[in-house]
Image 1 (cartoon, one colour):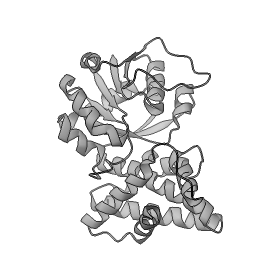
Image 2: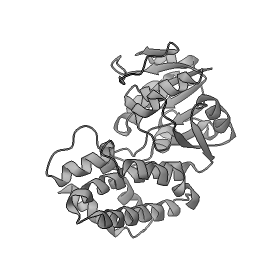
Image 3: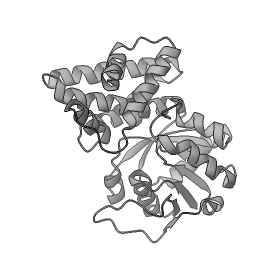
Image 4: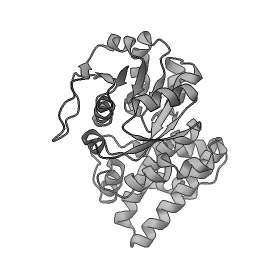
Length: 288
């Protein structure tokens, strides 16, 4: 089997390592011909780096890992070489301007069959994945996605579900809650208040998700509470660290997907008439 990974940042490269370790050949597409480097992780011989999207055409499945802000334009370019292979989205977040989730953008661009679309989301730091630290994810999708996903991610613990929208909103929600948690870590008065904010923010994410048709149990899966525990409590998390920087009056470094995720959650809450006072008030603070 040959898998094409679209995006050679830290997460895309980390996935390339774990997939290659399981025996699958990987074509790793990079915009600039570079891939993320991890200390003490040797390059696998069955990973081939390319800047030519045409190389993805022969792959049996695609893994989309492009950052949410560039997801649409990248998929439009890749669409010329798409032959209805199963495509698993590993990008967590929402499109900044439209607030759309990645599956929505995918269906607007390359228009895959619904049975060919899946979402992988869980508690992972890319460096640990690349180095072989045990890790797990929720894999959302139908029978075809579960079969091929099980083959591709055979070195990862997989929790299967058909709840694509729930898995996606967990990825969006945990990014937003992680920024809030980092902010309260500085501005709050102690651990009790941090726990209060994180719990209530996650409750509001669940309320939005349920209105959108997500299953309640998804929020306690690896893509939900699992990912939340990892990214909303550790300074290794870019979003948690960004919240700390904002609280200290500093400009966060790099892409902070949690801020656009928070905007997307508020947009959905307004659309479905869900009361989310904590998320709304935090959005106001961050927009000042």
